[in-house]
Amino acid sequence: MESSEGSRQEEEKPWRVLEFYSGIGGMKYSLMRGAVNATVVEAFDINDVANDVYEHNFGHRPYQGNIQTLSAADLDRYDADAWLLSPPCQPYTRQGLQKGSSDARAFSFLKILELIPQISRPPLILFVENVVGFEISDTHTKMLEILSENHFVTQEFILSPLQFGVPYSRPRYFCLAKRKPLSFQNPQFNNELLWAPGPLLGSDGCMVISEGEQSHGCCDKLLQACQPIKEFLELKNFRDEDLDSCIANVSETSDEVEEGNRSVSCPLNQFFVPSSLVERWGSAMGILFRPCYMFQIFFFFKQLYHSSSLKAL
Image 1 (cartoon, rainbow, N blue to C red):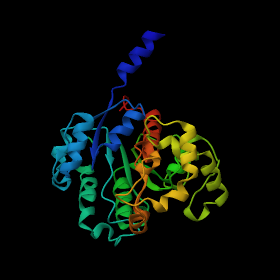
Image 2 (image 1 turned 90 degrees about the vertical axis):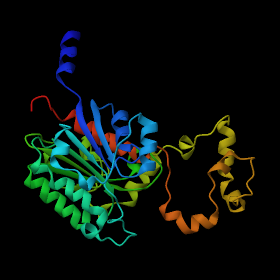
Image 3 (image 1 turned 120 degrees about the vertical axis):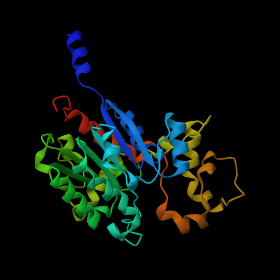
Image 4 (image 1 turned 180 degrees about the vertical axis):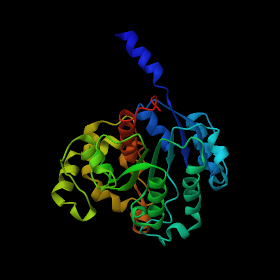
């Protein structure tokens, strides 16, 4: 029995993955957390500082340059099974100009997709992540057209960390694409945009198929199921009972904490932000805890991995 399992693992070679717009390595980190049998053979990012952090985190420096300059021959050399893409979100964000494909920052993403039919061995799997708003852009429309023309089937989701037990509401857009003959375990959701992970988990609980159908009751259930905030704060040498007392008094003390004049009696002071900054930038702030929306991403990777067989292709 053990020998048969070992031979099966040898037959299933690791995915060869390309990570576009790699940033500090969030996608690679999610692959690792999702225990996916995959190797990132190359990462690509134009930002020097992001590449410094990526190299520090993973011991490899991404290819630094404009992704738009890559050719089909360049990509062929990697013989990749999967592409991970998290293109710039500025052309689609609700607070931006929403210029879509006419925004110069969208050019490289479409250029990469247009290379697919020119590659001798196109990727079998694509994973795209972006902000809410991407799904109504002309870039999204062009992406789906290119994928369909190149024999990909897609499933799309908008999910929030709340749905994964993280007390933070930040919906993100995700697209899963598989090239035929690969298929999804739940083909009834092909070409659908869903707002809940239940279908992939075989559950209809809090089944939401559009933004307008989100209910307060479902959101309340999600909030109740979330882990408490204190589970996401990295505090050293501090007892739980002291932390609970501190949290109870946050509302009384937060207004008094100003930059340059902070008390050290409560460890939560290290997380306080001056009210002037909150008023100006509060809508753009988030919990920078690594698994925050990475829970969503490595969940998808696990779904792709366990429902795909590359060895037969």
